[in-house]
Image (tube, rainbow, N blue to C red):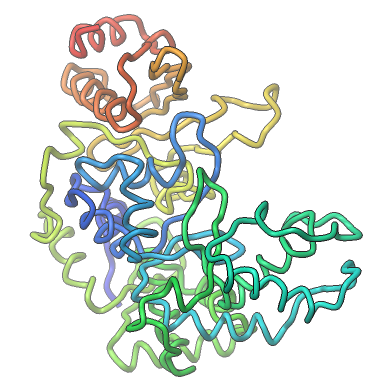
Length: 417
């Protein structure tokens, strides 16, 4: 079992997600490549400054604009949305997702709050799509469900969601963030509309779990795999799966400085650890533009490298997305984002896009105690602010929330406000 330093661990997590040492993708094809590298992209409707998924893509694609994601997924059919934990996945994975879709269908849906026969409602919804083409929840008439459901207020809305989970319909497009559904065969390209075998699928998702996390905790595999394949994977089976992958040479165990548990890494990524441990950067990670030491990156609130407590474990950076907290309980701000400089999280800011004046407002800004305070960091922050403003289409930047004042003055001079 190999062992790596915490810095190597941190750099690998960032690099395997396409965030370090800089942006290595460009344009529409770059958005698809970035999604494949990421493995999955969590989607969220909130748009205080930009949606989380667009901020995630901005951190990886050099010239990213928010319309690129929808073009890549819904016009080019290179990705699809799926799951109760709403994510976007590369379209080439669809054959493996047919197993969990099938198993969801076998489990069925709770229909007790329906006034009509479930079969009748399913037939009605499918007939509507077949005859009228892509439709949203609002486009299909239906009676209200007898009890509240966060999946929809109408029987037809709940049924649409169920048919989406079982793979009979897919999200064909979105209006804003509203889902537009269509029949699966009219959305999924024919070359991907088939079901992989059970064995292929379960092996695929075991390795996908590791790839998504970069270096995955050994004990976490059973939990994520249970979600992916929609059946219970207990501790014993989880260990058996890991041992099989290790014996096959597909996966290796690795120890990380500062952690007592074992981690797993895919065979194809092991060479990157050796390069990083030697203090170099893998050739495949060469940026197309500047690096994160020359221009900071604002991380999306749902980034896998920093969300759900990982920022604290990996970067010693205390980060909680406070958007769902009452105002009086917030320590930082409504939509605060971590700031990546080099290979570390050194600060955070609370941004807002004022669309009436088309201004990127910085409502709050906080440096970590050990954050750099020199001109190089200030320059990198200025460059990051300008790129972020360009991504959301803001014409002005209001630095009122940036403190200390000396840093604000430097930024104003650099951005030429």
